[in-house]
Amino acid sequence: QVPLVESGGGTVPPGGSLTLSCAAQGNISISTFSDLNWVRQPPENPRELVASIMRTGITYYKDSVKGRFTLSRDNGKDTVYLQMNNLKPEDTAIYYCNGVDDDLDLWGKGTLVTVSS
Image (cartoon, rainbow, N blue to C red):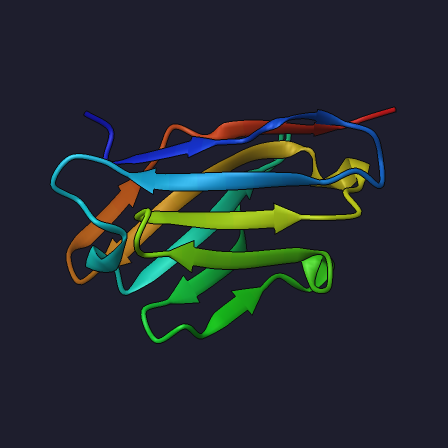
């Protein structure tokens, strides 16, 4: 069973919005991780960190998404969200959820976001 499951990807025109979700499954909880990351892999490019939220609530955003993307967590639903607004073609990528804590480094299978007119 995959411990982290992403959903919410799709195809939107430039300027559109999507909300990605990352849900924990099995005996893993979102609260297990000290850091929860959204990492994306654009076509024919390496993976890059997009946004992070720490257990303390501190967040980090890649410069190119600041002001457009918002990361939040709902401990009650054991889910982390990435709200993405004003999407651009360069945001096209597979988006992965990644949870890290001590010797844990878990990944979901990813969800595809395509921004195209």
